[in-house]
Length: 252
Image (cartoon, rainbow, N blue to C red):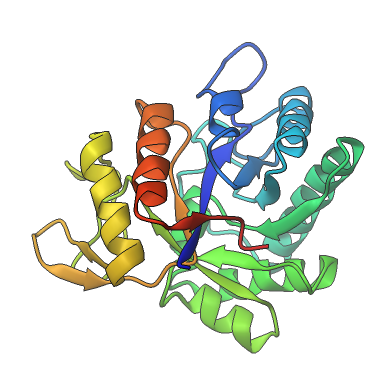
């Protein structure tokens, strides 16, 4: 039976400022990319999210990013590789401590936002993230964009790599994500998104923003928890996959 993992970025609220519906998303997805406090999330929010993930038997991933609360981690930072390695190690350790207090542990690593996009081509920063993961726990898988230098270098370093696709993001004809600054970069129609995910899982293709067909390999599909109507979208995606006999299960 064909299977796929569904993941979502969660734990991104901060203090009294709430973002998304983590409890609802954790009843739908199989993997949770939980913020580590650098781009979003405060200790209480992160701990509560870890507890909810553990209660729902959802795998916890370290959503590591740039130290950029004001920009939500969506601004590139020209950081020294050694500093980036230390920052990623710090974030992994903090999240893992809270996850273990919740009766779980981090099971994988997924860079967030601008860092995720940068290491598609930025080899120095990709290697810095890889060094952090390999130092912390070389058995941890890493999620990234297919064809990225990040996954290429991670494989070379002996890490398990997991190719990821995005349910609610538009793709360029070359298979990259369309910049969020471009109209149409983020999709909001649950029916359209669900149909795209089904095609992706069954055929390994997706329609690019210009209408062309792009080959996309994916072991995990991300539905962003902060997107408008995220819960409805995730439910619609899960239903269409289940209705087509696709098993929804964590990759770890």
